[in-house]
Amino acid sequence: MITTCNLTLKVKARTLIENLNWQIDPGQCWSVIGRNGAGKSTLLRALAGLRTPDGGSIAINQRLLADWPLLELARQRAFLAQARSDAFAYRAIETVLAARHPYHDNQYWEGGDDYRIAHAALAAMEVLELAERDVRTLSGGERQRVAIAALLAQDTPLLLLDEPANALDLAHQVSVMKLLARLCREQQKTAVMVGHDLNLAHSVSTHALLLMGDGRWLAGPVADVMQADVLSDYLGHPIDIILHGARRIFIPKEEAA
Image (cartoon, rainbow, N blue to C red):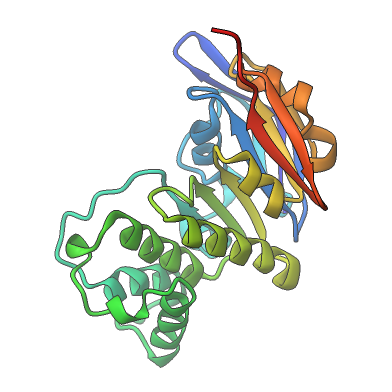
């Protein structure tokens, strides 16, 4: 679905990611894990085509990202930013319908299918009853779920999400992450998600990419990558893993004062 070849990303003189050779296949659900400033959001923006790499290349379906016309690219990948501002008085339904524009060609107005898809996406995020509300009047968590509904309505095979659980309460964190995992499993969509909750990441992801922030990285299945000693190194704090039935629970180890 998407590959990187010797991808290098920098911020000024600092190298965040160096020579990343990474292959993501359809149906896989990846979590990108690392400390603040390790390059997680920078990587996601590069994958979305919103940031030019400092070296190497990115390809979607074996076609270089730079060679995709913007309209075609919008039908291939959807991007959820970590932060957004709702400056205008759009209704929630209008916010979600805007994600259908890549499919309009020369048609300006939304059709019946667009409304059906938008309503289904709002329902999946449990905000259908807010469809006519001004997004500026919604809570942070409600706005986040409307934004994810827009991403779903764009109906792309590749989903790029920067902290999708941000501002969500516990129940919606779990339901949203499980929905994304189910889309990968049942519809062969591909998801790449940035997050900080190791337990959520492990419960829904098939693979993980760890970023050190100094160029180093490690990628692989969660069973191989999300090990206590490896995570402790990449996160800069000792991690314990507790087995609870079939679950692995990740907790920060207490250090002596």
